[in-house]
Structures are given as C-alpha cells and as structure tokens.
Image 1 (tube, rainbow, N blue to C red):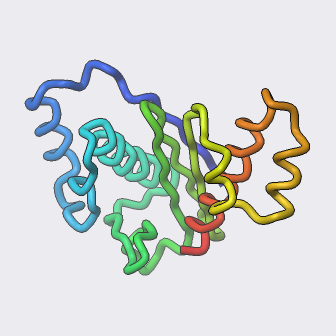
Image 2 (image 1 turned 180 degrees about the horizontal axis):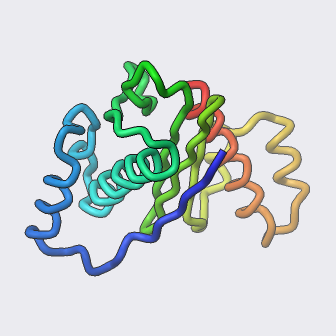
Length: 158
C-alpha cells in the first residue's frame, strides 16, 4: 500500500482556476464533486481525484476511470486493476491510499475542539471508558484516532 499526501494551495480562488480543474477532471462526472457545500471541499475532491489518477497512471500504469459504487466507495473501472483506492480530505490536506492487492481505506481530519457529549453516538462503551481515562489534553487526540480508524475501516469495506 502507498499513501500520497497533498496540501491544497490556498491561492486557488479564481473561477478560471476552478474551471481548469473541472476541465482536467472531465470524464469523472459520476463522482459527486459538485455536491459539496463549501468550495474548498469541491476543490479538495477534484484534486484528490486527480491525485489518485496521477498515482494510478505513474505508479501502476493504469489510466482507467474512477467511479463510485452505490455506497459511495471509489473504485477503478477496469477489468485489469484488482486493487483498491481511498481518498480523504480535511481543510487543505488531501490524502489518498492505493493498494494494488487488497482493500484499503484512509481518513484524515484536522483536529479541533469537540463536544465530548456527542461521543456517545460514535464510540463504543469500551472506547468511551478509555477516552475518559485520558488526560484532558490527550482526549482530543484519542478521539480523532478512534474516529479516523473507524472512517478508514468503513471506506475500506465500502
């Protein structure tokens, strides 16, 4: 498995550049790029798709299109590619994982303050107890470790 990380430049703000990204992403209309509410997420998704295509072409000699299944999982539309891809973005960071031999999932999140009362919805009792046993300064990091592991797992299994 290989991981690739890209930091989105902050100067992509003109409509001309947005249209150039859309044109570069032509043929990927089945990807829900324009469904995002924030322009930054739209750009991150487009850049992430382009990153995966670049990685597939340069590292695996695969030029087949990316699609999503009915659950939203990315896949390469190819009879010859047997691997898996995964994409995540948060704020200006974009990460993709590519595994030519097995399922893969990846998640990235920018740490910020969280309402720990909401953790009951996302964590098991065992995870909650472990979280509560941590020092106040460690709780945010522990929460994000649990969260990103769960998200990556769900992305891997589709």
